[in-house]
Length: 446
Image 1 (cartoon, rainbow, N blue to C red):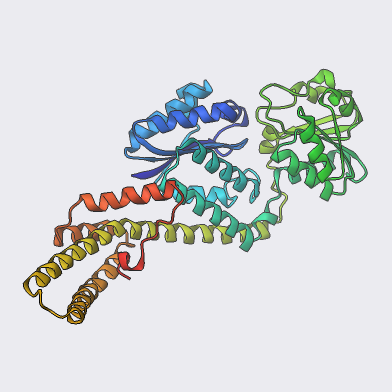
Image 2: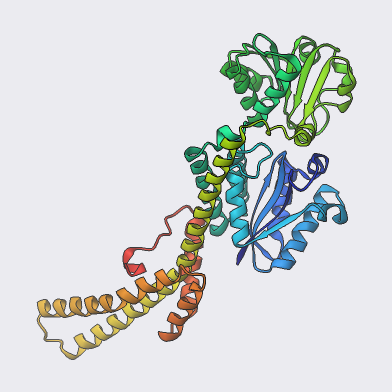
């Protein structure tokens, strides 16, 4: 079984196409379930954001799985295979792991180092867990990617090297409007991106912040966190007429702000939604500046970052990713031999018990204390004989050809091939039920 990634992002596709392929809510659940039902897919997870749609799977056949997943992306989005194929990328095995770690670290984001991607990957993981499409392989891989991302943000300046999308948007707003302090801001939506927007506005010194959302209670809660006020969704048009700066990011599938709703005046609108929240016709209104994800992508909005600091941060994060990928692959190869080690020690234990029973039958009159000492001695001898080879095979298993050592161990000791597979199945069940799957030191021969 191997890990495969099939997807497209802002690096390979225009925002307009990403908007058509992006899925959320029930549509995301349906796509995830359809991918998981494919005959060649064992585990599945989908990361779908405004900047990327990526399908992560564990598969038994590479080409067949790539074909199936590509077809499902085409079918669910309505984008033809001919159009979609030109923008898809595929990563397999080591490259798939490196890609996920890079994504989690912010190296692959539209705005370098933005931290929101960690929350998005975490949400994708949670959804896959809820839908039962995740198993031990992807679960451990994604958990490790989250740890790598957190480490990258903690140990380097990657967060400072690239501001968040909201921060970049505010920089563009200042270019259009001048200093933002004292201006009136309107946040449309109350989800995670809207919360980030409101908090960023507050840190930028804006004190007059209004939040509008279809569910008024959520607008109230968000407004309270930034010392702003909430307005009813029916009052959106009136609030637009009063606002200097508008940030919109809802989960709506249709346009939320039309040109008819906007009274022309000097204002800046940042549309961070996918699909678009704001009608593109708004751009033609006098005094109004509309910036969306596509225009940010075209302008390279994060290029203003200090090149020296950014280069150093990127180099540091790439070093962390390379180190973590190597460690993950080494640990994965070592883990593959564990079921074989467990099977060997199990077979040895059976042999010991059989011989001790035979010994006891031949000398029934033997003193109990002597019998216990003999039993302990025999077990100790077997443990010592097996200790070195089992430790050594685990070390050797960390090399690229590690699987061959486990195979040699099975051949040398004539181990039942069903036993290691049974151990793997138990580990799989344990992971799915949240139990500890680390073998004991005795089982691992340590």
